[in-house]
Image (tube, rainbow, N blue to C red):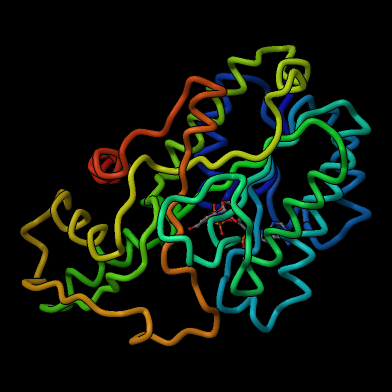
Length: 297
Ligand SMILES: NC(=O)c1ccc[n+]([C@@H]2O[C@H](COP(=O)([O-])OP(=O)(O)OC[C@H]3O[C@@H](n4cnc5c(N)ncnc54)[C@H](OP(=O)(O)O)[C@@H]3O)[C@@H](O)[C@H]2O)c1
């Protein structure tokens, strides 16, 4: 299987590069070899790759900056995925694309289903929703995997930040009114690879038998940022370095940001497990494994 991976230096893309290697021949490209804002060259690169599967791990993920860099956010998160889906459809290839819990407004109060109505609160969420719609409208075979609170131990993430703060501050104030599913980028990459392996050489036909479409795929269970931070401290492999003695709950409103975030954006991932017989493990056990693995990076 020939796989074109776009964005291999991002949190998820870096893990995908590793996880996809046993599944097929991976052609991995990142900025500046590809620039998702340059439609013409992007089309040509995709055509030249002759891939059976295109995995798009690129995204404009600067949620606050997106409020002012609207054009770039839309180009990368909305226009480029649509273009990739058009090219995939023309080539008879599968597109795997990732989206976000930020397409929701967080008002539901229980885990979101794929059938729930999206209502993004900021430019980032709007651009990602427009990307989902563009992929769907292109009409080819695609998987849109909506995920949430992605972290890795090698790029800037909430886990890295909490570990750093815990080495500097005796008291940490952490928001307790934001709830979602912490998701380790490595597990997300591995489940993507397993899914492709299940499809095998006929992955396009296999997904085309009613398996394509939109799925929620994130760490099982959910937590508040406060509970997540508590677990990060609990599983820190170097507890002797931690100077934090107290975690104090705070409200999102205490930390004003340019972009509004959904407060409750937990995702229900049952549809994915029922369709593919795969699920991401519980977020807390996964975090423990990630923290152990982080020592060896
Ligand atoms: N992070 C989260 O908490 C989260 C939550 C829900 C959903 N998601 C979704 O999950 C997916 C993976 O996210 P991630 O956390 O891995 O993101 P990430 O670490 O920010 O990686 C995004 C990648 O896209 C690249 N990129 C940005 N603009 C580009 C452009 N114009 N041309 C080419 N490449 C460009 C970035 O390159 P540079 O590093 O050079 O900018 C980076 O390699 C995305 O679809 C994201 O929307 C993420």
